[in-house]
Image 1: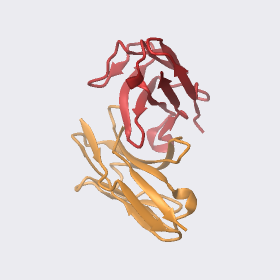
Image 2 (image 1 turned 90 degrees about the vertical axis):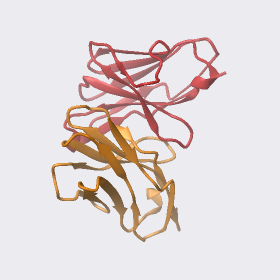
Image 3 (image 1 turned 45 degrees about the vertical axis):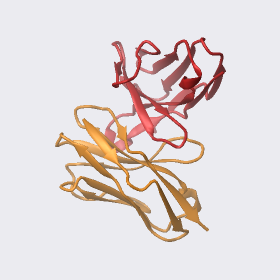
Image 4 (image 1 turned 180 degrees about the vertical axis):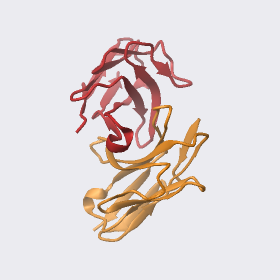
Amino acid sequence: GAVVSQHPSRVICKSGTSVKIECRSLDFQATTMFWYRQFPKKSLMLMATSNEGSKATYEQGVEKDKFLINHASLTLSTLTVTSAHPEDSSFYICSARGGDRVIYGYTFGSGTRLTVV
Amino acid sequence: AQTVTQSQPEMSVQEAETVTLSCTYDTSESDYYLFWYKQPPSRQMILVIRQEAYKQQNATENRFSVNFQKAAKSFSLKISDSQLGDAAMYFCGISNFGNEKLTFGTGTRLTIIP
């Protein structure tokens, strides 16, 4: 089955620094990946759609200069939180469609818990 | 635009009993896909069941089944013979055919009572 690996699982960074989160599709090619943010006991909020070889498409209200997305290959998308602040602390999850949506649905990474101190 | 509403923030059920989680949605598209995902305490999102909107037959996966009412834009999840391992947050989601974005509702926290 389709597997998505997300790294790191936890990261603590100082306020003002940048942190990069990687999302890899291990056994399939993903032209499109998605980045979500989840607050404690809340739903997953779609932040952006990552398109291989082109610019990401951001949802309304998401700062594209703060959340930089790069999808340089068919198996790797990265989310960089720039100049992180404590309010950026959250759980970030990536996902990709591993083939036909009906058969495979969307596969999710295991998430990254970001804490900005 | 697509939206999903889950009106039950929390539900509980006795072990071995049946529970139904509600979901309504809105979309301007005629072709779309509907999903139920489960998020246990590990926070890993796990696909429970999916449904193509053009299929009238309700999807079934072992103890999990859906009641898909397209005209009413309703997509409820029924869990039969509830087990302790079913305890989790359940998210209903929609993805339009031409747009791959998967949008979720606010979730329902399911507690299984031993």
